[in-house]
Length: 318
Image (tube, rainbow, N blue to C red; front, side, top):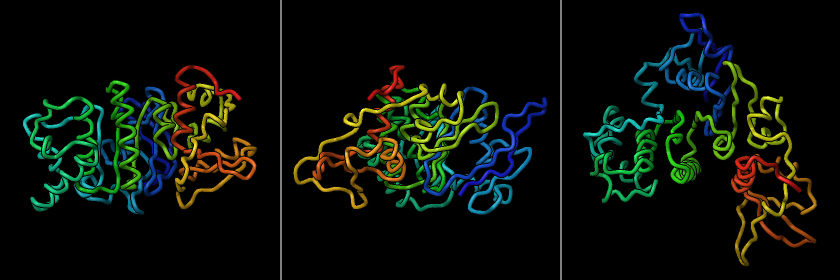
């Protein structure tokens, strides 16, 4: 979907922002770029829609170099969400959402229906919110509008540059959950920049950790937690060893409740690292003891448990 081939960015003073990046982001993937300040993650993001031009190498989207796209065509098919929400204060919420659909000549009825559809998707009643001005919304509500505005013209790709970092913890967690639900429904290709490892672990299908303009490790959240590439990754993740209490991960199943069609069942005695490997590709697995299913392990809940211990500065113990 998006491929970086020997991509470098060098500024006029000779400083390299990124050096010889080679990686691919898959269609429908939630791909997180993370690293300390100055690592090159935002530069990498902005090269995708040519807000920053490459010095060397190529970026390809759907097999075509981004330099071969008309710049407007390229950007209309890429939604962009910033930390600074940048809603136009003199325009209504519906008018803010309509900006790109109007540029690509959607008719008014289609635009209005799309705005209402997206507002409902993030829990904002269109009747109540479509005609409000941004100043009449809370910070979290404004950021929700920022997210759905990026989705308005149904782009293939969404770029998100630390979109939740200025929010309070409650609003941030709610928006993370909203974004995961949107992604579950729409399966966009999302490239998300953050400096928060816990956010990366919660959201990402894969994570790319950068340092000094270079890639240190690319992998799933499980791979970062269980197979860090080096000491820098261990330090950035926040712990060197994880030993997990399986009972904390199991959610009891109410009588009569069914499972997802692709749910696989494992014994309670299965090694935890093997269970985590399966959760890298499955939303949930079921666990049995003595031939009886005792509960479900959900991928998102597993990451939340790990993140909780990391935030508290501890390890996850047997």
